[in-house]
Amino acid sequence: MCMGDIALLLDGGVCSDTLSQVEILAEGLSRRSDMQVRIVVLGAIGRDSAVWRRRAGLESCGVKNGSRVKVFYLAGPRGARAVDGFNLGRCEALAGCTLLHCFSVSLLRTLCSLGAKKFLPSRCISLSHWPGREAVEQLRRVGNRQAVRVICQSKALQKALVAGGVPAEHCPVIQPEVPAEYKAEQRSAARRVLNLSDEVDVILADPEISPWSNHRQLTWAGAIMGQFNRNLRVLVSGCGEQVERLRAFDDSLDPPGLGIYPGEKFGPEVLYGAADLLVLAATEAVSPLPLVRAGRGGLAVVALNSPALGEYLQHEDNALLFEVGPHNAGDSTCRRIRPLATAIVRLLEDRDLAQRLGQQLAKDMREVFSGAKLLPEHLEVYGQILGN
Image 1: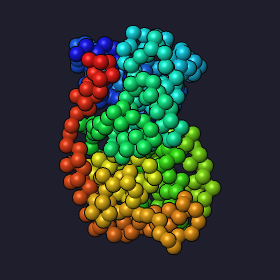
Image 2 (image 1 turned 90 degrees about the horizontal axis):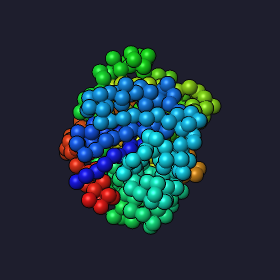
Image 3 (image 1 turned 30 degrees about the vertical axis):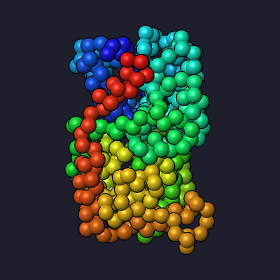
Image 4 (image 1 turned 180 degrees about the vertical axis):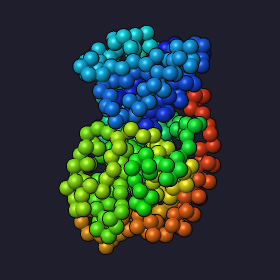
């Protein structure tokens, strides 16, 4: 099956988890004799970004595999012009590509605008979390005109996209692959890197910040708990406008500044190693990869009791799930804050329960994510798109 050249397209603010999937896939694809791989990064690359931290690793992919992986950076004004659909289809980085695989929701509008077959007739999109109604509507419209595949990391995301009108046959599920070298740092060592003492209670937020991840509610819950626990900190990775807005909100609360915002300067092994709990307050589908990392690090998880996580988590079995009670006043957003804070406090105070949940999560994630590789399933999808 001849594939030709493939471009893996992402933006400069991509999160660590997504970037790890790009690296794993590029490494596997580069071993094929019939394929050249391009990793194309569009937009500015900040010094606190995952791309900046992993730049040497990205570029070494080509060296390790006989220059079969090329990395292009389209940043600054050049990148802004390239993001226009017309110019993107003709830029040097994508010249001669037979397939474009996008990993960033921020580039979705541009990708969907490439409707003319003379530009880029074959493409697919990987999504780790719910992209929003507007993006789903774009995918629905494109799916009705072209055979664009949307690769989902979970069944919950697939179900949500299908409910939004995206054809079911265009939404294959491919679970993420955990990097083989991943191992959480020892707690004390990880905290030294982040300049945190061993006495601090550290809550790690879901690494994917989006309007549906509810980091704002977690920050608010942290402020409530901070009234009674001055050693509490909320660790938020990621960079970009969403994070800056969250930081400003954090500073407006009382007590302020409970959040720690390292950007993407440190890998997941540091963040998960330093944390006491992982909190997933998302109301929509998110990547299951944080659950795998939490399991490997023995972290207990607090999450919203929602269908989006139902295929992985069970209340008081491998996680502590919270939900809105009838006694909580206010709108749907405010009503989640106190139950979330209550669940977190329970696990911080009951370390035996937290340990048991973390151990069970580790066992369950090993069964669900049995070490299947990304490459074979992606090649099958690529073959369907290219008609091979």
